Image (cartoon, rainbow, N blue to C red; front, top):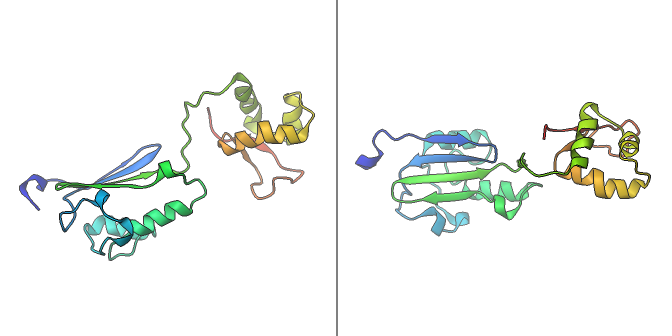
Length: 178
């Protein structure tokens, strides 16, 4: 550790769309993590506190080298897209990891007036038929494909019985305030 790192501490900053972890000091061998193959980083515990946190989250073994495990865990998730890949950065004096929130949907997504009315109507949970009647629609397939499924995919509506979308008692409820 050099004199610039005295008094430095690990920071974990949590935002709606990501978590950023900062640790003072660079890589053991002086390389920059963004320039190496994440799958072949030697196993060394750089920071035992962070190693312990990631171990408890089952993102890494206690000995270190969780880069590959973090990357693979992200890639295996259903909401993963390439723009949500974990970002590892280091220089001579710092190490940063940015982990994107795979479930984050921006709240300021513009939506039309019709969507807002449907979400308001579904605050207390409504059946498929009730929502179709509210929207004055009769074609069930069109309604599912063009109205209901996009709202479910965006996380604006959720099912009250998640594993049974065709259940007669299924209700749809506004997931978030928009």
